[in-house]
Structures are given as C-alpha cells and as structure tokens.
Length: 532
Image 1 (spheres, rainbow, N blue to C red):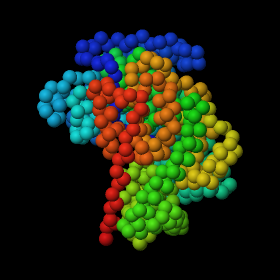
Image 2: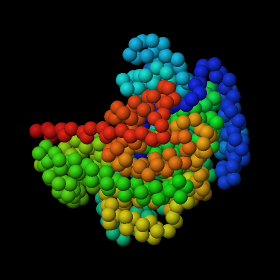
Image 3: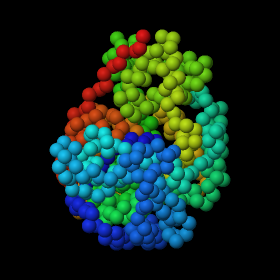
Image 4: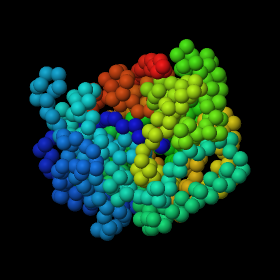
C-alpha cells in the first residue's frame, strides 16, 4: 500500500456542534478476546482525556512546511507506548483550516459540522497539506461546513521522524530494474534489505516497535479528543482506510462519519505479505490498460497500434537506458518509477506516453524530467522508513527468502511489471528485528457503527477491488460506491462527478446510497500531441 492518494471524507447521523465543548470522550469499550491489551485500551483513554483537556494550540505554521496563511498548525502529544501513557511521549504535527461558514454558491450561512480529519495513505505520508484543499472549487462546500484537519502520523516528517539510513546515500542515481532478476541480483538485494532492517533497529532502538497501525488508530482517537470532538469524522485514503477500519473496530462509539477511499483488504491473513502479492498482480492489469490506451492513440505517440507493440516499445526504452542512462539520471529503475505513477493515476498517461515517444525519437529530456520528479532524499528515506516500520511491525512475514523467491518467481511469469520491485520494497520485513503483531480482526456488527461509505474503482491496482468488497462485508451497514471499468487510485474529490455526488451527500447530510451503488467510469484522458 505504497501510496498517498489524498482526498476527503466524513459523515454520520449525529452532528458535532460547537456546544460539544464537553471535551470528555465517550467510554472506551472493553477489549474483546484476541484484541489489543486492556492496558493499551486504558492508556488510550488516559491520553484522550488529557488531550481533551489540553487541546491543540494552533498558530502560524513553520516556514518550512510551506503552507498558506489560511492554514494554522499545532502539535499533539501522544504516548509512544499506549500501555504506558504516562511514559515517553512524542509530538505529532497537525494542520487546520477553519470552516468558512458560508455556502460558496449563495453566500448563506452554513452550520459548522465539526472537524474533518484526513489520512492520505502510505504508510509514511504526511497529510499536513490537506487543509489547502478548502480553496479548490470541488471542496468549498465541505470547507464551509467543516474544519479541514490534516496531520503527520507518528514517524512522518516532523512527527518524531524515523530514519533507517543516511539519507544522502539513499538515492544513488540511475539503477537497474530487471523484471526477472538473476540469482546474483537476488542475493545482493537480500543483503541490502537485511542491512536496511538493521539500520532501522540501530537508529531507533526499542522505540521502533511502537510504530504500528494500531498505534496510528489510537493516535487518531487522541487527535479527535484534542479537537474537541465527541465523535470522529474521518476520510482515509488507501492505507488510511486500514487505520479507519482499525479505529472503527477499536472505537465504534466514537465514529460519526467515516469514508474509506480505495480500501485496503483488512482480512488478517492478508496483512501485509499477501496484500502485496495481490497488488503486484493487479498492477499488471493496470499496466495493460495504459498500453491499450497508448495503442488507441498510435497516431499521436507512435508507440504501436496494439498493446503488445506498446509493450515492445517500452522494452526498447528500458534496454537502451540499461546501457546508457538518459542524461546520466534516468535508468531502468527511474523509468519504472515514472511508469508506476501511470498505473496509479490515468491522468499521467499522456505525459508518460509522450516521454516514451520523445525518447524513441531522440529526445531524452522528458524522461529525465520525470526522473527528477522524485522527492528529495531525506523525505524519500523518511517515507520508506515509516512504511517499513509500520508494515513490518503489523504482522508476521516470511523470514526465509526462499518463500519470497518461490512466490514471486511464479507471479512474475504472468505479472512482471511490478512484482520484483514490490519485493525489494518490502524485503526488509523478512529480516525485521522488532516483534511482530497479530493483525486485529476488523469488523463491526449491525448497528455497531453509523453508516459508513466505501469508495472503490474496479481496476484499482494499488488497492485491488476485492479489498473494498472485504471491508464492505466486514462493516455491517456500510455502503459501497463502485466506479466501474476504471482504475485510478483515490476517488474522493476526483474526476467522477457521480462518485463525488455520493460523497458530498454523505459528508454534508449523512445520506448513503443504500447498500451498493455504481458509477460509470470517468472519461479516459485525451492524448496530448508531443511537442515538436
């Protein structure tokens, strides 16, 4: 779930009013058999009560956060270890834009509905930018009714940041990306993964074990209390849906409205090794969608008039870059990273197809430009460190590389595009030094939650559609809105007006479209003619 699609969510049958200055949170239910320990449940209640009393002292944001004056920032103190709420604490950064209180179309006053909290995914991604969306036309109605609240989860950015290696050595320039690696490459990458896992332990010590999805869910409840909300209105995208699902299981009485946008499959046996296998298989289908689109526009790009021929053109580019990286910067790994974005978001298709076309015609500049789109080294290393800490801590992983080799060699025969790159991303979990948890059995019975909303695209590769079906099945009373025959990752606030209409009705009025609804796909992107 290496993604950061960010958008919006919220909704419930009970409105939070400003008079909810009764900042005391509802009682935390006793842990069920097999659920997290009673001490952590008590610790969360202690931390939430403390946060409700202290609140968050919002003020101007630090200059390096590059947020506009309309956004204010503060920090939230949470326990590193919820079993010891009076022990070491860490501080999370929080951002907020206040509800405007005016309908953008009519100028009439709009009742405030509380805070809308967003987690954009990851793990390892900051949501501090989220309040900036309040000025975007499609978000103004929500920004009229809600304070838009973003935050950087534990470990991310300025929130007790994690690091596993020297960031200056993290990005090493042009690199190979074989789709069927040799035994020598596998041994080298396994050694590199083991070294990275050791670096995580050496740099973080015993604190490393506390960077988990369950603690992210507990942090969310403390944030709810600090904002003065008796119930949470939340939008989780991608990995953020898993945090939301855990929250709904741990704190069902604290849920007001909750949107799960591009849902992770929460089945315990799928967290996280099998989810990543499923993701690699789904990326092959999405890569085929891009190739088919490029083939339909062969007159524009000249990459081939069939999906197979477009794939052949891509292979030619990849092989040439292996011999001589473009501009000394773009090798096969950088090419793959750029094309992977096209598998996440189809609005990247014209730009990516143009870059391939231009390179084959002798102009490497667009490929070099795409290679330079990556975040700066310190941010990229921090994102990877948090991603691995959370996913490696969350669940058991195979500890024998032979298992990874067997499963992924088999998978790569039919899904070569992303399979081995996904292995190298996650392989430090095979050598992880911190204790592994057993995933929580996410579920909510009938009437345990107010209605919740699940958004999903049928051909989403980053979070395959079966995850939305599984989450919908596990949360009784949830409504599932499906974008048919489409695969962009992250739907809320995106290109599909039908999806956004369901979302807005839920966020502003608490209405859900029955148990299931579907929307026609948003239009495919129009081709852009390559520059002369």
